[in-house]
Amino acid sequence: MKKNIICIPFLGLITAFILLGCNSNKAESKDKKSKDKSQIKVDGFIVSHSLLINEISVSGSILPFEEVALMNEIAGRVIQMNLPEGNYVKKGTLLVKLFDDDLQANLKKMQTQLEIQERIYKRQSELLKASGISQSDFDQTYLQLNSIKAEIEVQKSMIRKTEILAPFDGTIGLRNISVGAYVFNASVLATIRMEDKLKLDFSIPEKYSSEIKSGLKVKFTVHGNDNLYEATVIATEGGIDATTRNLKVRALINSKSDKLIPGSFANVQLALGENRNAILIPTQAIIPKERNKSVIIAKNGKAHFVQIRTGIRKASDIEIIDGLNPGDTIVTNGLLFLKEDAKLSFANVKTYKL
Image 1: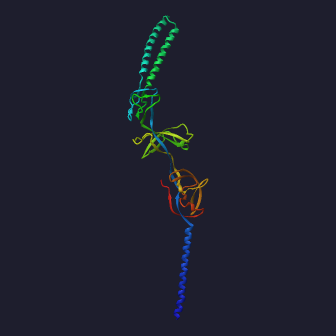
Image 2: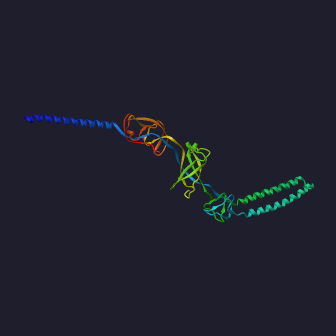
Image 3: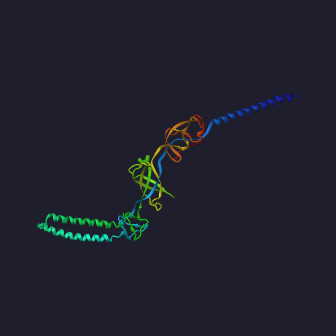
């Protein structure tokens, strides 16, 4: 009976210790949970100096270095034609000949008149020496002689206009006439292109105009082809276009390829300089505001909002001109849930890699 009385208080004491231990574990668990809740886990980015290449991408067009629409200066009937479509011709090749029999006949008439007038002039020169003719009559004969010579040159010029010659070495396009056709003034007979040399025309925004210099190398691609081609800037337009606020640029294509066809669209990439000490951060770290931009940096484990000034924007990064220093750690996610002096816990920290 006494043994039972002694056991009961002992069991009660053990039960009390167990309950106290459970309550203590629960309190510790609650403190740990509250501590975890007070520290927000985020991703971080360590700011460092990086290489920034100032590059822009614009649209352009591939054009033949020279291209001319072949036109006749005078009206007439086509009596001879040498327009080999798609074939190469040399400079000075006769491409089209118009009817000129009437002009040739008139030229012969004038040449005969010139021969007669030259004989008269020669005879009167002898008479003038012997005072057999007045100076006034001799001057009149000399005037008529020069007048006929001038008319002959005009007639020869008209005959030359009946001949359309190749203005440069190039390839003939599609012809628009046939032998026997009557063409009026300024009819487009065909086109000729210089295709052994190509040029690239493109326009850039006004703010980059000072960066474009003769000799600048540019790279470009064409639709349906991933190859990167190169061209050299040879000239720019004299001024900025008042409508588009763009500067027109012309470059000579250095690359040779059958895939570079005149008239094709080109995507031009211009490297306008580089900065090896630039500060680049991920664009998602930026908090845009009405009048400025800011980021969140970590100081002593707490969040602090810092106002920044940005520069060049790239696909996933942006340049920071002012507000950050190398070594700063910025927050890249969960920005909407952070407040000033909020406790931070980083789950992942990255840095910029070249």
